Image (cartoon, rainbow, N blue to C red; front, side, top):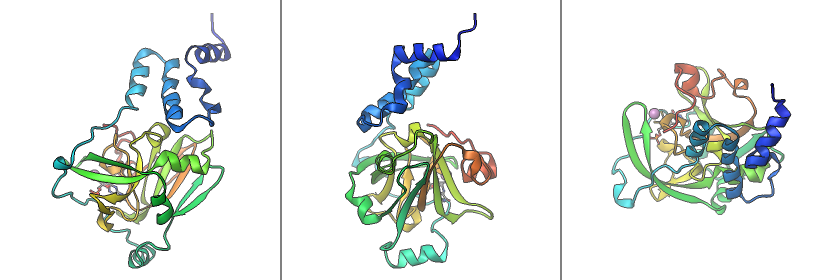
Amino acid sequence: MIVPRRKFLSAAALGGGGLLLAGCDALTEDARFRSFLRTGEALNNGAHRLIMDRGALAPEFGEADMSPIFKANGSISGGTPEYAAHVADKFASWQLRIDGMVKNPLNLDLKKLMAMPSREQITRHDCVEGWSAIGKWRGTPLRLLLQAAGLSSRARYVVFHCADQWGPGTPYYESIDLIDAFHPQTILAWSMNDGILPVKHGAPLRLRVERQLGYKQAKYVMRVEATDDLKKFFGGKGGYWEDAHDYDWYAGI
Ligand SMILES: Nc1nc2c(c(=O)[nH]1)N[C@H]1C(S)=C(S)[C@@H](COP(=O)(O)O)O[C@H]1N2
Ligand SMILES: [Mo]
């Protein structure tokens, strides 16, 4: 007998509750993240384990573990004259834009971002080119920004638009799904190793998405755009390296 899809969904919702996610705007952010992870309860055990695992924290380290030298890789500046002007006035007139599938698009300057609750974490950065470094990051949790902007229930991904170009053609950009976007260690960092984020490491704002490889850690983030479909952007594979060199979009570690 073929089980009608609606019956399957309502049975699964009764069993787990995770599928009620769409209506849980009123829940606290932690409850919302856990509820989001519980969508796995409608799946088989293997898939469930996989999804729960995505909520696990990346290892965090102590001050003594911090690398004395943290290599800067890829672009070491935003590159454009506009970016140079922002560096010259210490990003005083710079604003982050949050838009796309949100109810209230936002423009936030650095002062506003820094006044929000922030998270500090000492984590290891792993580049596919074969080097790693442990650094301390502080920044605004991405979930707080998405909640402030009123993320649409139709949104599936978050795209990060960067100031720089790496190689000819498209600007650098990256994207993550909502599990990573709401992960507690996913922050837009404005501080590195107890100082202001240096230009070579992505000033004034760079993504730290700690369960992902180095090329997902977008530097020089100017704009955060919520979307339902990555095919709408540039080469359609969700990121600069994904488009240009077939790197995996999901670079989970
Ligand atoms: N905007 C932008 N973000 C970027 C890159 C880049 O070239 N441009 N390079 C990526 C790669 S491959 C790595 S390993 C890290 C390097 O970050 P770091 O310079 O802070 O070490 O940034 C990532 N984010
Ligand atoms: Mo990298």
